[in-house]
Amino acid sequence: MIFSKKCMECHNIDIKLKGPSLRDVTKKRKAEWIMNMILNTEEMIKKDPQAKILFKDHVVKMVVKDVNEQDARMVLEYLRSIDNNINLDTIPVKE
Image 1 (cartoon, rainbow, N blue to C red):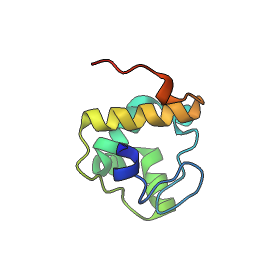
Image 2: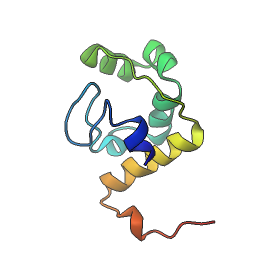
Image 3: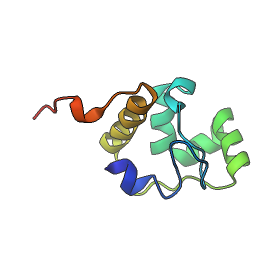
Image 4: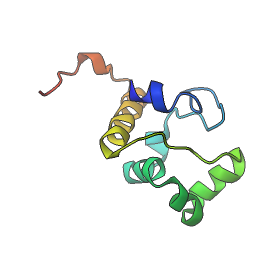
């Protein structure tokens, strides 16, 4: 739900849109890098070599739309589930 509302305008799993496609991103990048890219985009583009390359390739800065750490973690887990072919609907939710 969070990915649909806050990420899909620029990202798709298999197709490059404004931003890169995200298939296998959790296999290519560490979780900390993904979280930092979501939560600290400006700083990452200034300091991280991989983020600089992505910015150069896509020429669009990622605009984070009211995403907090919990949202970012949920997006990360969603991407991880896709990369590992896990159906999140089968995982019990803790209340």
